[in-house]
Length: 110
Image 1 (tube, one colour):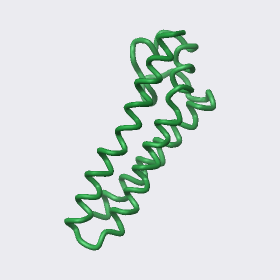
Image 2: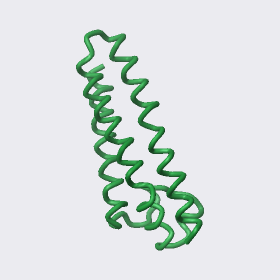
Image 3: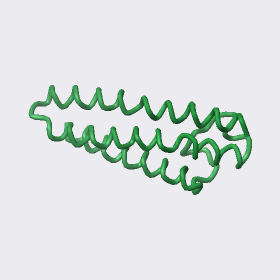
Image 4: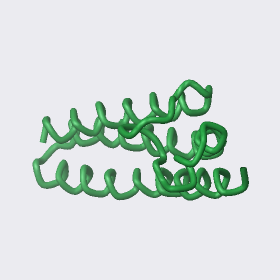
């Protein structure tokens, strides 16, 4: 489960980084990273509004995933590590989805 833990840590850190860039207004509109919906892609103004609105939630999800990765690595058995990794992935996605919904709503109001 070492690989799963490392993947969660790297993914979590990348998500926190993307959220921080979005919050700072430094995540440009493109097709790889970010909240990409019809509303957010409509204009730069909508894109930046969406990422400012959803950034804290997205970063929280990334932190949860990274912490879960550490717990996955520290788990005493493979079975426990698997459970921790699965729960972490699910729980970490909740705030990310909330951030996306909040961001999309902000983009629609622009």
